[in-house]
Image 1: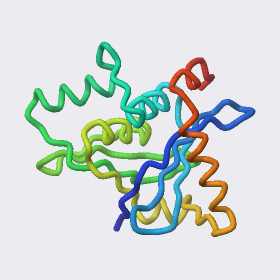
Image 2 (image 1 turned 90 degrees about the horizontal axis):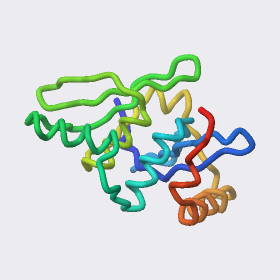
Image 3 (image 1 turned 90 degrees about the vertical axis):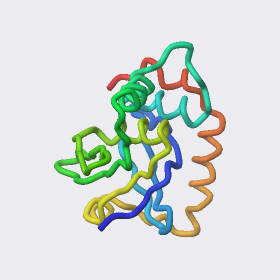
Length: 158
């Protein structure tokens, strides 16, 4: 069993300068924070902001390769959490599955426009419910996302 997730956005956690991807259940209250690398954070931020680089970045290239091979990415799934590391898979037509990092999976899902799911076991272990009194923190997070630019992620140590 799994829940469909929506990308809230990416922010940089200070002082460690570590980017965090924040997902939220599409039809629920749980949030799922995942620490990711700066390259993937930039790829996600660029796509969310509608920025088109002059040449395809890695995730754009992968999207083009998938299309050129005549395959369809149907969804991405965050499948496991082991010792603080999240695992995901790309689910293609014909139930072909490829193991991938959640950050790469989300960057690709945003580009192709396919759903993102998190397995219930992952949400049970790492999902957070933000009480109503903390909703202003989520709003601050959204305001931060509106003000941040992809260049803010460059040069972060990962």
